[in-house]
Image 1: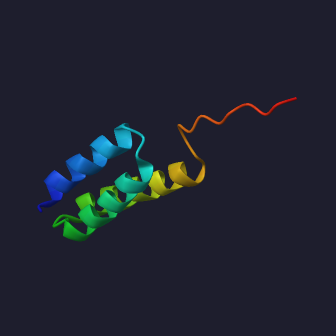
Image 2: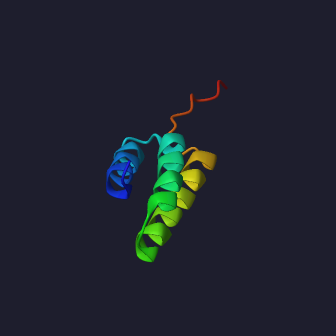
Length: 66
């Protein structure tokens, strides 16, 4: 699969909040990139998605009972 197709899939997953899948897709895209700038971009997006996953961005937690 070419870089651009995988990058598009990664971006769509990221926009949907599927950060785990997006991080894996960005990592794979970085490995396919022919241009250094594309590789760097994909690595940065992967790092952002991994951070979002760790920090549970977009996860709605139930309120604690008092």
